[in-house]
Image: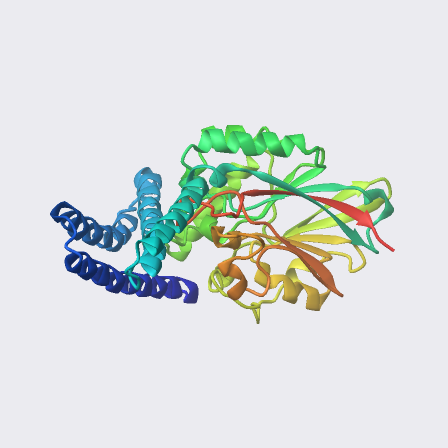
Length: 398
């Protein structure tokens, strides 16, 4: 089990233990205050039920046996976790004001604040989750060929088809927005599916095929695209999942960059677009928090001219420093982190876990942009972290 998954498990256990303690104190206070019998019974049944639901939610993930029940079990498990997070956090906020005080004033304050938090959570589930945001930025490079000054690159990542509630409607809106940007090309940063390549069925392919960009669509694979998150994830199964997904995306004209490079030409000028494949070697780092060390990328660029302007698409942003050290990439585009689907006023739990987690970063050797993703995984919500379509205007700098 990866470090981050183990940490998430312990965070949930600690949260559950803390809430159990607070719930017990709350129940004692209800008894001391001679609360009505109905309220005490409701409390005694509803609160334990929330813990039962939480700790049985992994059971539904284990029930994912094949492609047929993958989507239903994934969404059910995520819905349970979402319910627990919302119910626990709002309850905890109320307890902070209500438990230590005997005054009704603090009870009202706690009720108001917890209600506001509850409404913001519900907003994240029912509104923000599909409130697509176009972020348009200008990024300058001294070595950008003159013909590409003003070139528009659309970039999306982490669609996670398997956890979209209304996948056809949601994807159709994403495609419509992409087409409205009048971008010269679209780059996709990986994690098209959750587990199985079959999630990308003919209905979805038909919608994705309507993306219109003059120079085409180019894509890499992400960790979820490998099929690694299932019990039958043998190396052979994972490679078959990658292969099937690549074939499906290629069938609609998307160019799969699996440790490969394509060249875009304008007049006498050219730029290189390189994609880093999600190989078995990278799977060992799928939830690494820091820079990935010991991963050799030189073979990927061995035929790419050293002086050519390069855009690299890497699902994992943790490869950026490796790319910079080798002087391979002028602009690296990544996803993967989603800002942990929680971001308010540029603040997110991700900022305490990753050096680079959202937006534009740069050093003397290159630039990195991390897209916050389109879909959701883990819980069915986006709290402040709106799904993102990035449009990058390449500029010739001095």
